[in-house]
Image 1 (cartoon, helix red, strand yellow):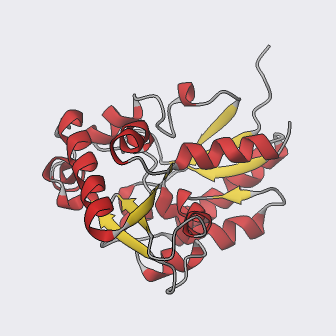
Image 2 (cartoon, one colour):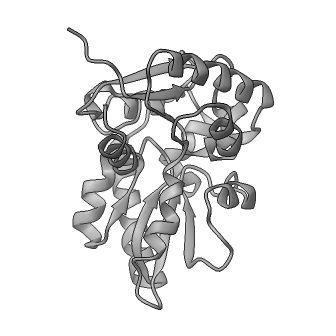
Length: 235
């Protein structure tokens, strides 16, 4: 018998993910891979949700579709709700107000917690799919205040990763991306006093273990957030 799903995941519409992201989605730990979860989840594809309407130009029409899907999931017995893209933090207040279950749209919600773990001079390193797209409004909606000691690094500086935006039909060399991320995290630890990492992008958890081994620092990502929520909501 199929277990009742306890967490609903709002995802981009089908068939729109760039080739590189499709490769990442096949890795265990990715938000849209069912094998990433030790509990039942239910995925819901949102019409019109894609890299342009969520990450680049947040769409009110997409938000309305998310709210409709969220309410449907609640009717199906879902106990908590998340999304498959960290940039959906921009919709956190509206989604949380639309349903009477916990809503956690982005791993960025873990930044305030991570900041409390630091030494006086330590910083939280935020690794994001696109630094230029991560605005002050996104940070505010995650509870990240201007006085919090954070440093933000965007993967658009990685040529291989940037193909997602510049050549979406091209395959990604995941090994090169992994090497770039580890080099970036070592540099942030060495040069910027980063004592904990938060990975905004839901495609990055497959690299979290390697970041922990390489830097010796805590790494918070989509899976740490979702697993924590699964442990506290019961069901």
